Image: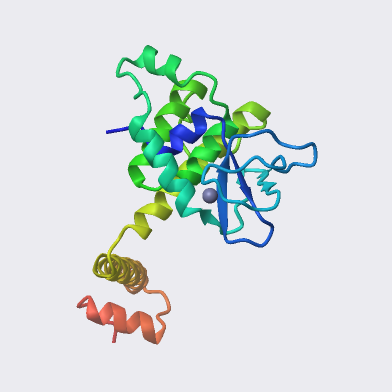
Length: 230
Ligand SMILES: [Zn+2]
């Protein structure tokens, strides 16, 4: 498998840039002005001629893409670069050296660019190797800022993966998944109702056996259990 375009962008320390109301973002590797814009005359990866583009900032947990998708030309360029690029070595410590210097922010850019579930796993591997594993995602967000950043990156990776997994389903697969969910909900509701009824029956039997007052419902339940309460 060749290195995903997402990691090519991360290795180039690309940032994501966009026009304020545009529905796409571009990858950009040039200088950034103090006001957070692309430098005049320096174009994004796709070479689009535009007015200066705003660098998309990180908001707390993840990059704030505001629903934008990557520009198709930027994506194609990055993929072409990925195919030609030097590929990461297989040995773990060589790989760590190959990806050394990728910050959490670089990896968040990679997450945003990841176009397949496999891409998200590739980004996750690099994150684990350079910034340590997050033991389990159900844990609370750590207070320590560096650990919180790593935690947020993990959340972003998993969200992106879930999104791509659903997006990758055919309409038939999606319908099958929804039907399976509905059947599962139905099963668990029925099991819950049966457990409640069994508990009520146990109580009714208990009351009948100890001669306590029985409601009409208790009598019905006890009768269903074969106990004469008349
Ligand atoms: Zn572009």
